[in-house]
Image (cartoon, rainbow, N blue to C red; front, top):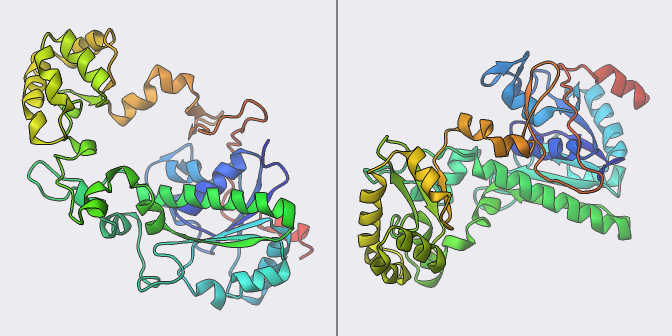
Length: 371
């Protein structure tokens, strides 16, 4: 596998760090997860299946889990040996905590000049908000993303995807792999400062026209990506199920409106998103409301247009395509895993479903370190 032989030390908790180190484990890296004496919190968060929480299973499979008290002399001695052993270290402490524990980058680089050290925090290692604690919701709110999620009455709605967490995870993965690629030629490691807010803001290039070009907030509902386009919108069907039209290119508008015998509306779809396209939205809303979703699904299969039924999570994971892609995988013990989304033709990743119990590998790892 691509990362076979790579040694990763994971000191992070919750989602961004554990998710990225699990992806590395899926592709062959040896990951040692250091848990505090109380354990990784997500061991006990949410519903459990086959003896483990779904969250823990899908962020910690294939890792060796050890328990260390990093404030103790014994814990400090062990972590120094682990730093010398590791190629990559991932931590998610509040800025300054790693230095107080004696495992900041300067100290780790002295122990291991080739180490790639990645810090993931809410706001990054410097700046006015660096010391402010925050999880996903607060970062989404502070980054302007929650303001884009509007309920029908116009009030901000709770986001239902941990996009700040996952943006941080994937940016960290990219940074680590680039640093490892450079290390292959220089022999030197590097320090990576990942801010979840920075990562989330970097995901917004397609919606920044109004604030960047005109110094104004977007009018949610009239912008291209949020319903201003008639062909990029949600529509209710007769059975109160919904479908999404998801492609605003002129060719798709032409195909759909011609099939619906309203080619006279095509010209409106060439107008800028917003009120100019309202007549098309009214027509489509009235049209789709006349038949149930299943009927429209069968009809739309024959039209070259971007569309999808609005599925529940259960429906999405039970969908034959999802199953065919291997994105749902069940181990012999009955535990359900997310599949591996990065697919190589050669040396593909492989799920190791083993979940260490709290502290299960502590004694073995310490013996291997000579302690």
